[in-house]
Image (cartoon, rainbow, N blue to C red; front, side, top):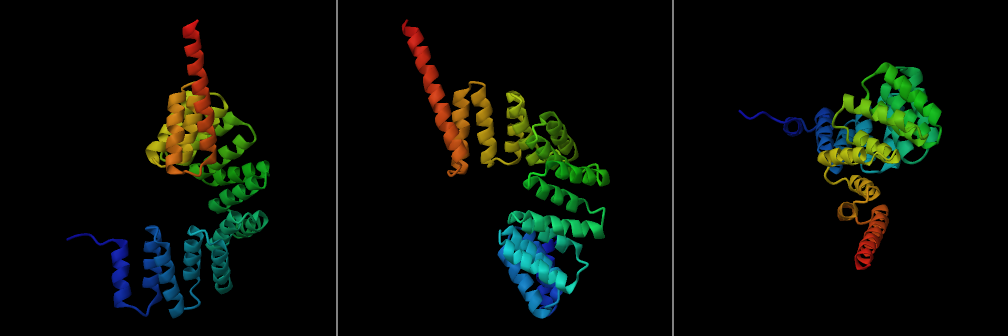
Length: 285
């Protein structure tokens, strides 16, 4: 007998109990996991028509709106959830994320701080507040929050990666590389940590190591235009212009609007032509 999926279970529950909220909410979650956010939102809408004071349905719909980049709608849903049940800690956290995505860092920090006063061991809130501080350029406060997160959960790849980014912004590349390596120890498939470590290696002039990390990113995500661009930069610094040109073209094939790859491509092509001309001129003398 074939095992039923989470989606098929809740889809069947909706058909059997069309006037109950739980099946709609849970099918919405299943849609969300599949990246089908519009269908998820439709199910949360149905749940809220049946039970307008369902705080969880508002939170889940807010997450779906956030995934679609509709941050104002997400914030509105988190507000509704908290008006119904002010103990929903994830609503504060999620609203903080939405504010941060809108560039409203002080509002995001206020939500994370309120949440941490209620639950001082909420690792995700320390991570997220650190990101908001980092976006404000308050790097020491960001590092302090990542340290708090790691004191609570020493295996948090996200906290190591984020602290590494902050060290890198301060020009502390060795510490950044150490943190990215710790993140990869906790989560070997963390493409962000490979990407960031590659950038740090490149800043230090360690181009072979930068290329190796870009290779790892591309094994995990073959359509990462930024990784192709960064690998191209490393090849260019090594004087391997053909490989650099190839990587910039690959980046542009994935994202034709990647202006940095376009500019790098022009520079690499010019350097390649200049070297070929110099070789040709030398051969004639």
